[in-house]
View (cartoon, rainbow over the protein chains, first blue to last red):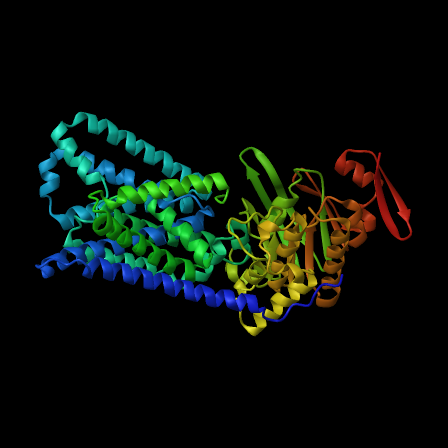
Length: 331
Length: 250
């Protein structure tokens, strides 16, 4: 029966908390350094023009990194699962279908000539609307369990992809080439006038999480323990779904689909700072910015590759996915 | 006082709980019954983990269907059978979550006091820094009970808390529950399979079968041969050893 009497506040815990703060600071610094290096090193003679292009790319990357990183952390929290990403909710399939259907119905010229802001807004509303509508109907109205809805999203996503594949066979090869370009994520062709509205949306979605940050921590214990501890489960989950939908849809409409990126970022964030959202959310943003901007830096300046960064990121994310599954860390 | 009235739950054509009306009073109440009797479902509905299809449950004057979940969590703690966690947490972190309903972050002096008391009561001091996935099933079970105690509620609902516990820890947990009833006036409802343990420690026993309450009363009234045979459809003997009733299955 005799067990050692523990001190009121173990020194180990305090050290850990301090260490988390330090890790978070280091991650933030790393992100800033990457951005600074990307912006200011190796500037050509016409530096103002180059700087303008680079700052546009960095802004697009930062917004996308924040949106995808935070959305993935949130999605893994509400599903109590460490290998799912919001990609499973069917965002990119809606995005693809939209692009291909437009090209099929109205021709590639229409898509290329459409006003940028209008097409961004339409894509955003349809993608976010699809996900929020699905969850609102199945989760709040029909009161189905969350895993069932995740599966429903997955199946609807497959349906959209099949429709897309079918339409792609119907359009002519020239139009097909246009579509191919549109459906791959690209950070270097971001439209400047979309940066501010996207940033505002993503920022608002992240800010809305502040009041529920503790409830989200509890939610990560799973549904029943969270309800037992007094979390209004359906309300908090729907709030998270709304934030995820806005963030992922806004970022996908800006740069295109980036599926595995979030998995990479969220896993690293948990490993480095743990599961408390006060730590893991900022860490996910910092790691995301570091990965995207740092990755582009390495590709551009050190390796001189012309490969688009998303290809590399998706590859690394895919490798991590396999590692997570094989080591059993993901449950 | 926990009052359930006409509480029902069905899964498609299967009736899990069939319009149960029952009042659970002070002390330690044990719910017993064969598999599939609806014990866990009833407990989960009282603890608002599962929605009722019909009926009302009032716990200490609060209607569980309409009271804000957080307010309820300050009065009522509920623990389910399987406690699988999707994330890696230390014992201390988990127990600290018990302070969430009180708006605590687990770091204020009052929160610390409750967490320390719960860790002490469950003798988890040596394990406080260990990750839950590195513990045995019984140790993990005790950590979850400690979290429920850190919630500092008047009502405690436990679904088969003796699962995975060796005799020493099972007896210690039951004695702890009895102690909490006696010293702090906690009202505790426990779903359990071991009738002998129920008979030894509980004040009141509720016997459920096929979604209904078969009988409900003090141990001496429920732990009798005719009741048990009707309940489990298995021949039984009830022997008296000292002051205790012991059930033997034939």
